[in-house]
Image (cartoon, rainbow, N blue to C red; front, top):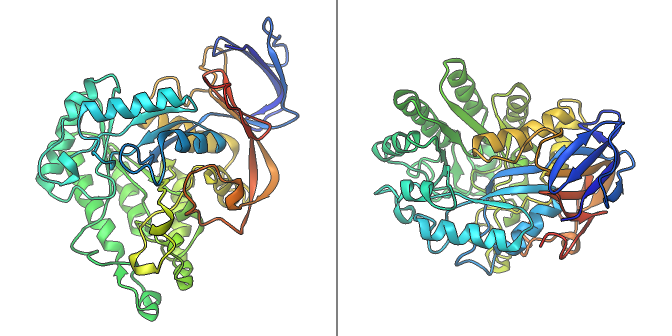
Length: 434
């Protein structure tokens, strides 16, 4: 492993300083730090240094859906976006509901080597919502699963949800709930509003999300277990989580970049790239989730990176698949919506995109402060550069990004995973991560 010495880096936006890295560990930070023996010197030239980003909600699709994404292609995209760890959701084929599948996903991630891949285990067998999965076996496996989710499907049965919360408590796990009442969203295509009526698209009411969150908050309080709310999207949901935290309920929540940026108005294009679950909401909801992220009601930004094959998105809206890619643009969207308007500083970005998701996922070695003794997981970004998003400059194997044709701020210039350079001067470094 090559030792590194980074100069002129602005750690969390502070004054330029130096970072020394030996054998994958940060050994010194400060103006008086000296280069380790034989170190590769990187002049950051004033780039912002953040802890490596951690995503709690990524769909890598492998095994079984390799026409959309693979662990290799998805983790390359993650590294390009400044990530050093991603949590791979369980809705693969076969479903990650047992130790064998989660260990396979973890092995594929280690083999690819771009980022740390933490498998998410299913809550129920085959995501059917009838019987608990082999949660204990997955927790005790070599994959050390701590996050469990049927994402894409809600754990609708309150008895099953209660049992899952009770079970994960025994090994400090967390249930990450996809809050969607299936009866209230049967056939839904977009946010329920006057606009959905004008467009002739079946509406998806906010209460379908909020009613499940309210129920699960009460269950989590009753059981005394950890609950995580996936892709929170409405003002009412923010209010519910804020209420729960004031009562001391052990709940965390995430918002996606696209729910921070887009509104339901995108549906007027009938472009399936903007068809997501939960749907894009009203402007009032966008403002509410932004404020929730600022005041800590919402703990993290998670991408819900959801790649699909071309035929699943290059079609009419009604038959298009739900979801969009996001690993390569998430940081830029946070800069655009939260940093540039002055709502968040770089320390806040590090919290919601690195340290808090690592804490929720119980991932040791990720999300650590940039200081001596920490694992060298870093991303160096140029916040001033604006880049035009095109399909040609995207790494993901899928093309269903909603950002094509838009300009976003910030570029990831360097990503360092456990002391290994995976991105240098904005380019993926094939071989350096192996």
